[in-house]
Image 1: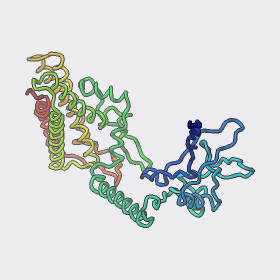
Image 2: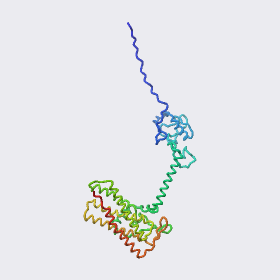
Image 3: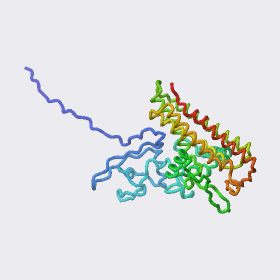
Image 4: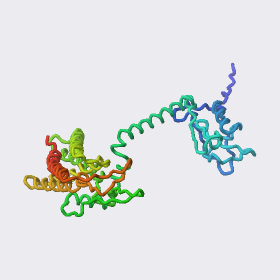
Length: 388
């Protein structure tokens, strides 16, 4: 009889997990040319700092260059965020903290170039694969292009709209805006109309800013009035037009407002040229005066939103036209009939107003009345809102 000896199978042995001694860094990205920086959890109180794997060789080369030639040890990479100037004591040695992205930039402070300026900071374009000479050439070309653009704008538009003059016309306050709106809507209640001046160090005169003189023209109210007019036209189209609001309405309204302002400006400027009216600040002043008509136009459109129509709306429109015409008659007087006793200091040279003889005075007053009458045509074109 055969005897069979039973034996138990050998125990199963699971593979022991092993960790590689070096974990390769992920591929670099444009925002992080030297790779990602890894952080581990902070050690417990009193516990040892876990050793970190060495970075790749090319990263060690950059770190050693920025760390002034000191070798990088596995324990020198901190497990938690540290200040660049803080040091850790590991194994009895003080090892400086070197960030992983230190090789991407070089500056004249810290461990960089000590021979440069104190506040200079220049990125190392070589980290992105760009030659330093090519990068510097590109920066110089960019600076030259910007300087050429600024010079072109200054030569072509700086003489027409000088920056100090435009800044002067935007120097307004809340009190000025309220008083100016009341002046535009109720001009027959206002006195006096003469603009105020102040004496400069050279003994000449210059106009006071709108903040200090309610009779001074400004650009804030005209610009805001034009923007409000465009938005009100779009709102009217969305409420009253059967086809609803279309984005093209805003562009059409802006184009119509721009054409009206330009035509009014050219008409006044042509009249000043024919009548030999001189003055360097007339461009900005005339643009400001041609924009005040939008206050009356907004009043007429707002009354229409309230349901007023027929002869009552026509009465409101006629009142807005008469108020704007009277306002221009009194305000443009300082441009068409300036005071010959005042020498206005300009950016280039002082301008002295010549004496006007009676015949020239009559022609200029006639031109003022013609400009006031033309306002009804401009305002009638502006209040025509889209109906389909």
